[in-house]
Image 1 (cartoon, rainbow, N blue to C red):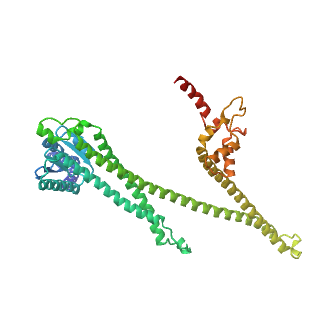
Image 2: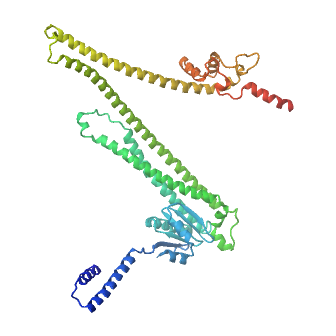
Length: 485
């Protein structure tokens, strides 16, 4: 603000022409200094400060130290590689093994582990970092009280705790989403027994508003489930990638390297492999449950679409009835308009013509309406016939699959001098279906025969039945092999 005020006075002073030349030069020099100072302040504000990393050091003996510094200081103090910081800053799951440490990132848990110290990052979530720290301290205290410090190395205990807390965190997220989704699905599936009133068209009832809100909630929950599935799959993929590397799993025994001075044998990694397999199976089970819940949401979405389609069809049917009635009334109105002209026709004086004309007009309107209704019914009947034929053909094809082996052994499919007609007749097809225990109606058998008999010759060839090799061809191909043996 002070700089802006000084620059304003400088601009005003430069506009004065009566100042001496020496004062003008001094004023110009001061103005340049002010502009340079303002530009430096703006550049300093625009330049981003180095990002500070908050860490917690948890040692094997139970000591905890808090540290905060820049990325350069972090790399210099803990001898990390710059690419490790990039991996720790990504949103995906990682488990990378280095020569004397390994790093893990299972959001929101991240850190690096040495043979006697664990470095926990608090960038993503400080409560999550504090929880992991407390779990490590509790595990160290329990092992010290039970005198089991030598059973499992420190680094593997930290990895197991990080994996356990990450999996539990994802399972708890799924449990919350599952409860909310089940509640929303129950609201959508419950139907109201209350009859529709006229005022409901203007003011929506509370029950309908609640069910509509549940539909929007399902959309949000479906997106949350998809995001959770992505996180779980990333975590599972990270563990699966490490399971395919025997060298990395053997290098994770950091305490063994410190004690013996040499790396562990590449085949001796049973503890790490069993740990990763166990958590991998839990993640796969969680993926299956997420997919099952998403299928329930998708099923409800399809039900909603069918419901909307049914309502739309009802509205269209009502509009069609109104249109047909309006067409009949339009014809009646035309006739009434002709008779309502102020012109003399001689019919005005005849007794009973009014009632006769009214009856004729009403009859014409009724005939037109019935004619349109008959056309609609005829269309619905044809459509229903197509649907019935399709359902009959589906059931008949399923029965044909059961009778496939009987038809394959049929001698009617063998073309020879004794069998001039090569193909299966209708009665043979029916006998094969009956022998297979397939109970089809006569209509279903007619539909199947009409669909299969493409050339309409009254016989079903092997090509029409989809049989590439008959029993006789199998025997002819097998005979030379038997003779040769």
